[in-house]
Image 1 (cartoon, rainbow, N blue to C red):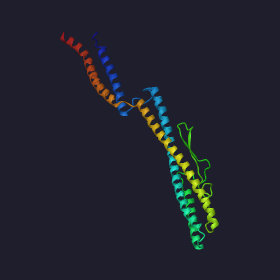
Image 2: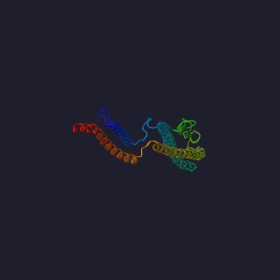
Image 3: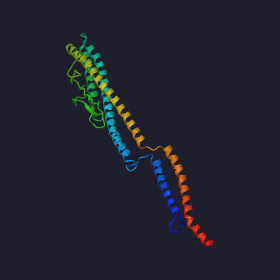
Image 4: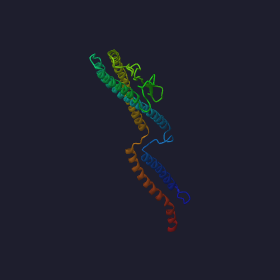
Length: 278
């Protein structure tokens, strides 16, 4: 190798190696600080694009989960109200059967009728208040029920059917016009009450089955989101144990490179000492 004071080849090579080491060290430090081995498209365009698509799917599924959570809440409120109505119907049966007693005096029958009317009003109140976030599937305002998102593309839905539990709405045959003041009225009320109990139980069973389906699908969506997030992590997350080892090795290389550059920069001084020696 030619010794020259104009061109220090050794120093240039040492500087190139040190620059490369510094670049690699910067990359490792970036991966450690962010926890990501693929932070943007320039790191790995294909992997980044795949990860971004999966992130979009996760975001969409999060919206699906919110929709299913709302469906679960509406169903839970409806079932709670329906069970309350069922209990009230059972209480009504006691009043109606008691009114079938032909030996009842007028005052006793009037008291029974007052209790009967109060329980009917309690049923109407329970149905009117069976709402969550504006959704009420029991008050007769919906004809087909409510549809909720089921997939990330918003092309599939799960439906919570509407059940009209208002008085005289088809499931509850009793109305406020029913009366226990006469034996005939009590007989008619008992027939309607028995039909109402049967129809209510069937309706609540259907809502319960749909709520179970929604709950199961919500659980599946939750697991799917977890799986996608794990997959994204496998694609872009850095192995911090390996990066830590690389960091230590590169720090040593950086120190050695700096020392090598320092030695290379002393070469011209060695040439100058030759002239001094002469």
